[in-house]
Image (cartoon, rainbow, N blue to C red):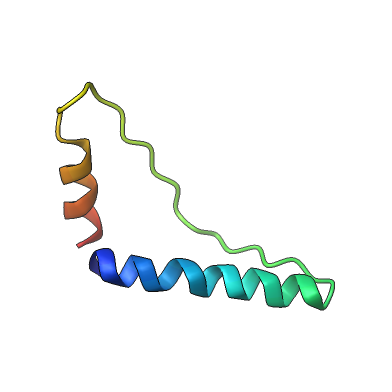
Amino acid sequence: MGNRGMEELIPLVNRLQDAFSAIGQTCDLDLPQIAVVGGQSAGKSSVLENFVG
C-alpha cells in the first residue's frame, strides 16, 4: 500500500467512524496495532516502511 495509501486510508477510517457516530452506532474496526521498539537510529522507520510497502 505504501505511505500514500496509508495517507489516504487514515482519513477514510476517520470518516467512517464519524458516520457511524452520527447515527448512534459504534464502528469497531479490528485494525492491527504495531509497536516498534529500538534505540535512536536503529532503523525503526525503515522496518515500518518495508512492512507497509
